[in-house]
Each structure stands twice: as structure tokens, then as C-alpha cells.
Amino acid sequence: MSTGTLERPLPTRPGLPPRRGPSILTRVVIAAAVAFLLNVGFDLLEDRWETTEDVLVPGSRSELVVDIRVDRGPVDTAAAALVGACAWAVPDHAVTLVGPGDRDGRYVVDVEPALEHHGRRKFVGCIEDGTIDRIWGDVRTIDRIDP
Image 1 (cartoon, rainbow, N blue to C red):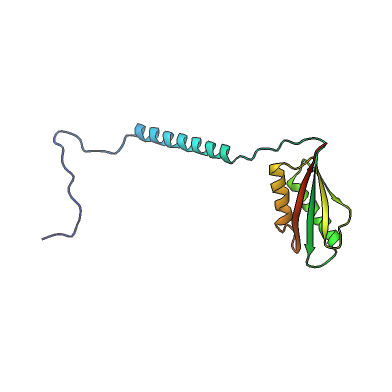
Image 2 (image 1 turned 135 degrees about the horizontal axis):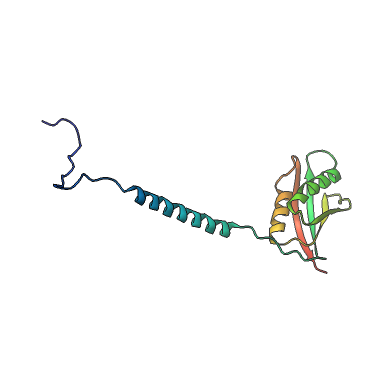
């Protein structure tokens, strides 16, 4: 009759010591190899996802036309606050809100030097992502003006 255990006896090896797991040296070599491969893998991912800096052209500028809407309060103040808050996204640039906007809340923003790929994504993302509660921005056009 069965005792209910599923264990099978290990085969015996006459004249040899019982089997053991990998030696300490083997374990250390395997751990070092895994650590090395992980390090190489993370380095490759870092190089793949690295954000490269834009090449700034002195004397160039970008002119953005931005629609600003507010829930309440003066639109001119809200536009200045939003543009000022988003200037951090492009720290190597001078960001200027040009004059008061028109009746429809359309403003012109000058950025000098001109925005390149990464700077454009950061600045436009900041304007359009609701950085300040109850102030919404929508970038209509971006024109690059070279010297």
C-alpha cells in the first residue's frame, strides 16, 4: 500500500560521493557573468534612450502663436504666468511674451535662440499640458526665423 509520498529515492552511485550543487567558484562566476550582462544591457538602453542636446544657433529665434484660455481672471496675466512657468523647460533660451494678446486670447511668444527638436517638444508640451490649473494653452504655429 502507498504511503502517500511522491518522493522517489535518488539513484545511488557506487563508490562516488553523493551529488552536490555547483561549487562556490561556479556560483561566483555565474553571478559575475549575470552582473556583467545586466550592466552591458543597461548601458545599451541608456545610450538608446539618451536625450541629446539641441544645437543652438545664435541669432536665430522661434516665434510661436499660442491661444490662451482661462476659467476666470484676466487672460493677459494668465498668459504671462503660463509662459513664465514654461520657460524652465528651455533654460538656455530667452522666452518673451510679445505684447498683449488679441480679443481671442491669441498671443505671440518669442524664443531666442530658435527651438530645435527637443526644446520644441519640451516647451510646447509644457504650454499644452495644463501646467497651471485653469489655464489652457494651444500652440497654433511655430515659425523659425534665422539671422
